[in-house]
Every structure is written in C-alpha cells, then in structure tokens.
Image 1 (tube, rainbow, N blue to C red):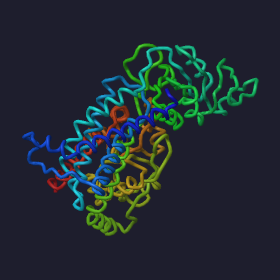
Image 2 (image 1 turned 45 degrees about the horizontal axis):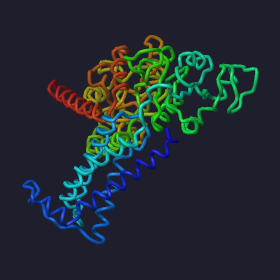
Image 3 (image 1 turned 30 degrees about the vertical axis):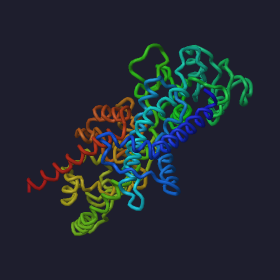
Length: 471
C-alpha cells in the first residue's frame, strides 16, 4: 500500500480531472451538434454555456462527482470487475444527483444534454482510472500485524499467521496485566516473542508506516468499542481484517472459510449509507413528531383525565456496547407501578393484560402509541428507527444468563423497530428474538432498513384497525 495517501491523492485527482475534461468536451458546440443528430437527443436544446455559466456548470459537475466517489478514495484491495462495477455505480448516482439539481435549480438549469452526454464518457473513463490505480488483492506473503487486548490470545493467534508477521499492537494495560519481566515501550519486545508496535491508538500510523496488508484481530471480547475502532481503521486504509475462529464471535466472521483465520464479514457503514440512515432517522422522527402533534396532545389529555398522574415515563435502556441511555414513553401503567410491586417487565412482554395497566394505557399499548415519545430519542441520536429493540439493563442481565451471545445485539445502535418486532417476536422468546437481531447485525443496510420500516408501518396500521374493530 503506497502509504494510503498516494492512492487517495491519485484517485481524487483522477476523478476531478477526468470529470472536468468530460464536462468541457460535452459543452463544445460541435460535439453537441453531432450528438443531436441522433433521434433520441434531437429534441434536447443545444446551448453551450460560456463565461460564468460554463464555470458554474463545470464546478457543479466536478463537485458532485467527486463527492459521490468519496467511498472509492479508500485504498481497499479490489479486483478488476469490482473496481469497474463500483465506479460505474457511483457514476450513475452522480448523474442522478446532477439531473436532480438541473431539475430543481430554476435560477440556472443544468442542461439535460450535458448530463446525457457526460454519462457515457464517465462510465468509461472513471472505471478505467480506478482499475489502473487500484490496490491489487494480495496473493501471498502478506505483511501482517496482530491487534488485540490480551497477550495470551495474541500469542495463540500468532502461531496461525502465514506470511510476514511484523508485530502486534495492544494497550499498555494489557502488557502490565501480563506481569512482564521487562518494561515494554512502543517498539519494545514482549513476552509473546514479537515486537510490540505500540498501543491501539497507533493503529493508523502502523498501517501506513509498515505498509500492512492484513490485520488479525485478537480481542478477548469483541463486543467492545476498541474492536470496532480497529475494524474501522482497517476499512479506512484498505487493509484486510481477519480473526481466529477460536477467538471471534461467529456473528462477525464469514461462515464459509478455509483455515483457522477467517475474514471479518462485517464492515462499517459506507459514509454515504451512514448519512442516508442518519438523515432518514432525523426526517422520520421530525415528521412523526410534527404529524402526530394533535395525537400527542390528545394522549396527554387522556392520561391526565384517567388518573391525574404524570404523562411520560422514563426508562433506562441498553445502548451500543452495553452503555445506557434514557427513553421516554407515554405512561401506560399506574403511577410508580414497578416501585410498588418490585417487578420489572419488558414493554413488549406486558401486553395489555397486566393489572397495573390503566384503561388508557391498554389502548396505547395495543396501538403502539405509547412509543411515540421515543421519536425524540431517535432525533437526539440515542436510537435509530431500525435496530435491535433496546431492553432494560436488569432484563439484559437476566437474559444473558440463559441466552448465549445476547450481548452481541449491542454491536449496532438500538432501534424503534427491527426484524424481531416486524415478525412479532418479543422478549418472551429471547432465543428467537436474538436470531432475528443478529440477522440484522449481519445484513444491515439502508435498503434493508426501508423494508423493515414499511413492514412495521403496515403492522401498526393493522393493529390500530383491529383495536377499533373490537370496540
């Protein structure tokens, strides 16, 4: 890997220059005249811009294409067909954005002919550029480092590494805990017989400095932020991430793989997909709170008229990596119900039959309207619209004692709905619920989120209709 930055500079430079050349060519009057002789393009007006208009059009085209290609600037090892398909996909996305800008910008319309003509040029030029500069997948002799938090695990993993093993990274605390006979500073030698290249904070520097091809993750516990921080660094710098079968959760690794070291299957979200997900969360929560404002007022009034108690009920829930956050719900039980009885129940398990549930609360639970205040948690970023449903910390502790891998649900941000909720699986069936939640951890994507949201909205509407039909 050419330090990573050479690839980044070359990829950005190629996208900017090739896009500028393509945009300049298609705005030539002769090129446009020839193009409009084709039957499909004959109706498009030819009006090549000049001066400030041409500068504006050129800058808009370059900025849009360069921004859309952002994920491809990471020096990830790619085969030719992968490089071509990814680049062509980004070209189509960029052209869609340009067409949208041209449609909505009424002060100066981006000419449709420009978008139509620049598309085939970029579909050929940009994939060819990324094929030329791509980082080839290693075929052997990989330069490998081990990253972990336990020297015993690191030593075990080191015995399975083929190729050139450069050393390992681990926290200083792990070295101290191991009671080494010698002090180990960055660059010193450790008890595992390998060179310690530093702590976890140096991973990005080490990947570049040592031209690393592969990182083997050797964490004692994979449900910690440090593991995903190392994985994110590998993704950012185009380095393959592997793990030992005996020291890695099956949720994270490819099920099909030969040997004891297997690829880590889960990758951090693409920056554009992350922006789409977070953007959807904000839009969904904002629109929901605005549209449901009259319903919120009516529910608040109904709760007050019912027993005069508080409107909202605060609960602590488990977030990413076992941390906690507070959510609010419309109170559906008598005031201080759990304090009086000493019992804690999941909001999913209570249903509408518990004696502590108020008449108004029963309707709220059956129609899912008690969950409306959680839109605020989504807006704040504590939750997402889609993800494993967060449980109360005390319930998580109870479930963990009987369900292996329950904490692996904490790999992603909790959600208002998820595969388990869509399939009507509750906390009464923790093993089945875990299966659905881990399915989301493995297969999460923005498209998958949209399917789950559509199904959940349909389920809620069906439940609301059923409640009114019974009355």
